[in-house]
Amino acid sequence: MTNAPSGANLRGAVDLSSLVRPPAPTAQATQAATSGGAVRVATDATFTDVLDLSSTVPVIVEFHGAGVAGELPGLITQYGGRVALATVDGTTNPQLVQAFQVQQVPTVAAVIGGRPIQLFSGTLSEAELREVIEQVLQLAAQNGVTGVIPVGEATVAGADSSEPVEEPLPPHHQEAYDAIEAGDFATAITEYETAIAQNPRDQLAVAGLAQVRLLGRLASNTPPEVPDGAATDPSSGAPTLERVLASADQDIAAGRFDQGLARLLEVFPTLDVDGKTAARIRLLEYFEIIGAEDPAVVASRRRLTTLLY
Image (cartoon, rainbow, N blue to C red):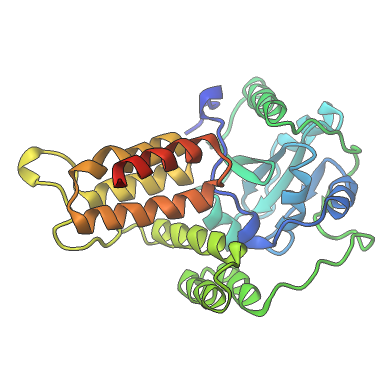
């Protein structure tokens, strides 16, 4: 795909923050955001700094091949610190490649307020790149991300020794983080489940578990398992629950929250008991991923309650 995205497609996707580190305190986030220049080199190990920075300015994320530099660094510096660029070597950072579902390089995405947005793959002209950047800035403004950072030379995210040291993660969270970094989603799921068993009120573990389950399903590229009898009647021509769940996963990962939630809510009344249980569990996972305060979650939770009772 080489066309600039339309404004309607620039919607937040899966929140990466709890898959990497819990959000830093505001003072730390501000210091991390103002260190370094508008063009940075990011890696699996340093992407937390990009997430912090995205609360101040929108961050374009460019995945490239080894030793390949595109036109974006020169363009980004012309925006006077209103937007930043994080360049990622797509050959040496598997966690980020998986999280952003990178299929080829170059691939360009963005992060606004900790949420990634898929932009385009391939190459664009300078005029098209400027259009994409302007669209990202508009979306950032709509979400209250309107800061400015100093424009300087490219740096390695996290390389500034003046940045505060992050608080260590709880043991099972750290094990989950390490497993995600290695692409071992099964182990990450086990660690989050253990953390929840030890502390059912551990909301970071609950959100992390929902997110890593989604990433694991997307990585496997296989339809999720559902109980026998949960599919709709083949004679009706309607898609099975398996297919609905798989399509909803793709919607949620791409930031099409309303569409993904609506898919399950629309088929919910037609399902048998086991099917409704599977759909309800998946909806609850999506609510954790998107966030309880999101309007799509508020409306969908209300509709689910109506359907249940």
